Image (cartoon, rainbow, N blue to C red; front, side, top):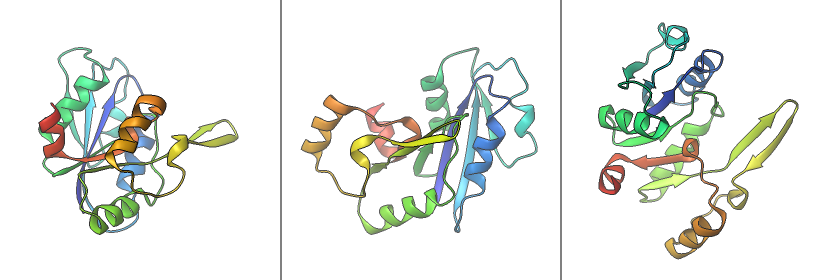
Length: 166
């Protein structure tokens, strides 16, 4: 599976390396392009990952995570886009699971639950997504209006869909 992963970063020198490594160290055979967007960091965030196989782009000053992600999408070379945040870590088999779903079904995007960890405690986030299932578009619209719990780092989407949406 060929995939571009966009990671916006602003002053995350303590977490950015782990976030990037959690993507680069995925199980399975994948062609992964990691794009880190420096959104005006004033710390050593970018220096912490300078030895890793990542592409680094910089915004013009502090523009916010959404604009940073858009810059990443513009520069992505693969047709499937995933997102991670600079303080989040992927489980080791995320891409295996994503590839399985994209291969098995003819889909344009998917989203999944996340595990929230605080200290020694963890819980599943994105409550209504606790088990694998396909959701029809009417159900999805209702869920998004009432329970919108889709975090950016839980979305994997085809680039052409992002370009259509804008």
